[in-house]
Image: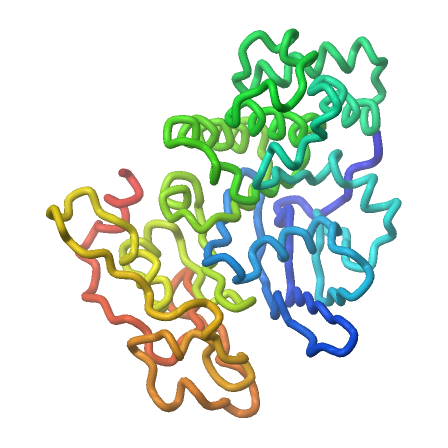
Length: 351
């Protein structure tokens, strides 16, 4: 097994600093999909990346894993796994790290798994590649992994093909593959999107237990605020390639400051709303964003927008600034909330 990347005791498992990803095609204007994203994740911590489709969440995860194509893509900034820089690392080094020290659970298990290869072969190849095991030992370990993630009769399932498993079982098989070598970092990209509510809750509980039991750092990528509420410790809200609000989960839900975050929360249907109560969507679409160099990208859709939201400040984009303990905000006219009652935050955390 390859050596584990070294890092100072107590340091974050993952540190992302000013990450930028640009796609360029000949004869077309370059597109900045990720624009100066920075965050960190510690051991046993779950951090959420939240936003609409197209905001840059998945591209961020692929850049961290080194899975973006080389041609036509420019990646800059810094990504450190336990102190080791990944941006610019060789393909051979990244292959050594992927699976062993960092792993990813993709959104669609049916397309992520090879439909012509048995589940057992797909799980054991990770073990054979990164751990000093014989084929029989790997098969035994693979069955144990499927059992750990809640797949019944794992020995039989190892001989089956992906189409023979339900959607929930396929997702669990992907999680088993990702956890085969006890990685220090796990990235889950919309792992429950295609699952029904019951299976979704089981997958989230499984991820929660694994993070606590193994000390893994988890990055949860989702547009589902229910998933965020039930799993994440800290949340980074993304829009048009940038992080626009960062907060503790409870603070974010109790007092969103960025109008976009408030819009996301307001658009979620409420069970306590009366029959016929209309939903409150965010007007416009993500395509209405303006370049950050011209002001706030969300301004064309924002009810709080004013003239200064559409102009540059000292030749730079709207900055991400301190907004209280543990909070950062990129907004010139944030939402206002009354002060929280004494002990409200603690009570919310207890719930």
